[in-house]
Image (cartoon, rainbow, N blue to C red):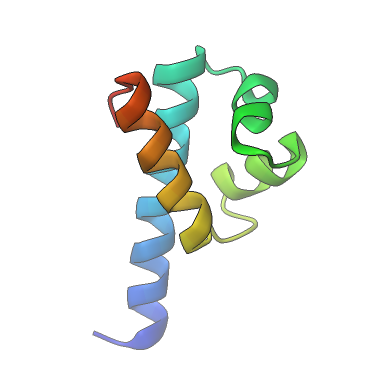
Length: 73
């Protein structure tokens, strides 16, 4: 598998993780999810739409908060 392909797959997984977090934990309310994650709403929107990569720090934060709050990812 090429590096570009692997990065694309990883970003798709990050997008799905973030989308599930927002949808399942906050009823799709990006503003509320952004507040909890400490990121601007525009940044989350850009990540979910694939314009920006979901970084490792955000993924770890999403997983930790989801576990704490019982949010299904």
